[in-house]
Length: 287
Image (cartoon, rainbow, N blue to C red):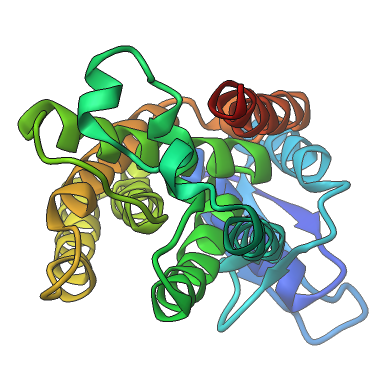
């Protein structure tokens, strides 16, 4: 027997498609409806799912209100957070300060110094770069990957997670090669963003048919991009690998906590914690 359908009106095709993706992510089957009359665009859902669908859409609108720098790109459902430009500006600022004041001796990831308790170098080293070419490569790839990460997991949550993944990549190097010496750069954070994106498909687990196929495709795509971008000659491959693996772990956690990651208050808290993890390590390094 066919289930009775109810209609949720939408203002435009774009809004109907966005809402459809939201409902699919919540395991609610929906059909985009566009009759040739004055009703315009809408969504058809089973009557028993109507209230759940309305609640999901209301929550989606609340969580995405107040983040005007998130914009749709390429096609409906793919968002980009232009807040990643602020991260690029920070990279440029630290590069200029390093050029003027010489921060590398106190801020690079010295594995021996980290082993002796200078944990803050795991974070300060992310903001330092050897030259303009090094900076440009990380800023370019980071702008894109971090923007997608922040849009997918939330502005604050995505930024903090990628930053922690970068620090995790530096820790990975310190644990494997404690006598290696110094390293620097944001590439571990960039690869961490890639790892976060690679496992975002875990959010579909047990919610959509063939979820295992989507998860496998997402992780496989992320691995191929990592091989292409992270295993280039003359780069810090271990830091790249550590950042990517850290991103996979953090992304898996966020995929199981979608409400927390997309919550406005949670994103503000994550943004505050990110700022703290920028300021405190540098305060310790300078003192």
